[in-house]
Amino acid sequence: MVANVWKVVASAGDTVDDGDTLVILESMKMEIPVLAESAGTVAEIAVNEGDVVQEGDLIARVE
Image 1 (cartoon, rainbow, N blue to C red):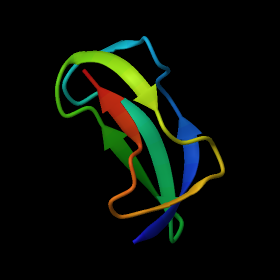
Image 2: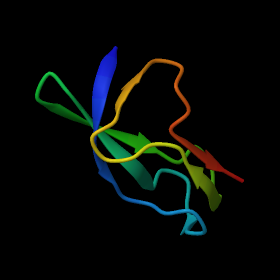
Image 3: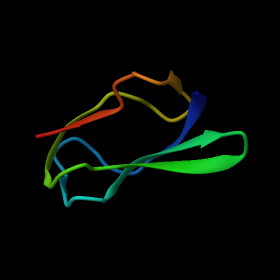
């Protein structure tokens, strides 16, 4: 699936909980939140608003 990065919610250095929204993607007029899979600190947001991503692309890294 190809999607556009609609909104970057989290920033590097932010502390997040399991399930917090990191980035919101848009595909076929649907918003798809990318959620943190675990609690931790956002080490990297690898995308910018307007970028095009597809399955397998790194979007964010939480440590």
